[in-house]
Picture: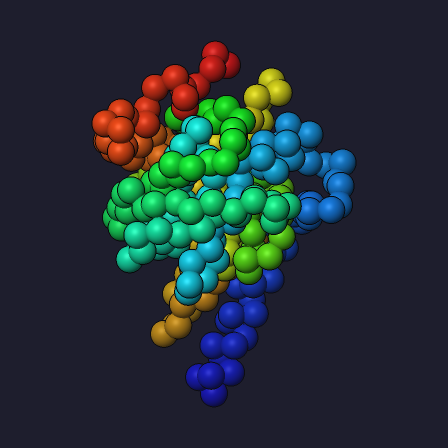
Length: 245
């Protein structure tokens, strides 16, 4: 009886989250396909800067912040000194050293000394939390497969700490990928996708459809400002500054 009630309650929560809250159906674009709903600038930045993270135990996502540095979630690379990152066409892979891994912030900085001539596009990090309903694009490699861009919206239901809710679903392999926001043709990193939003139902924890958590650009900037990279320079500065808006 208790089991049946739990299943019924779970079904009601899923229906409420997917329909009653009226969350939009995501638009997805895959490598090798096109989607007119995804802005060209978002696609261009994602295809250039968002790479797959490969370890012996799994896959994740991440993105370049300057010519030699790359950001992902700490839980993707924790316990490893070196990982492999691979571009979206699977034609170039590079070895990246794990320079810093902050378990509390769940952020990690990777350093790539030999980029084999690759140069990423400029990265701008948004320092402000997005307002409710702003369009956002979650980018990553779900299940370690092909580059995927999912359209969603910023939400304010998560207010603890620097995190923010988004309606761009996040699954295994997406962790560490950016959540992008575009304004006046400029692409900003609004945050880093981290995990699916989970709520307790009776004695179990249940993922909520279409809801995920991202760490905001504010948290990312704070993390990067406190790190010294291999050559003694800091990652903050002109390479990640926000242009006039």
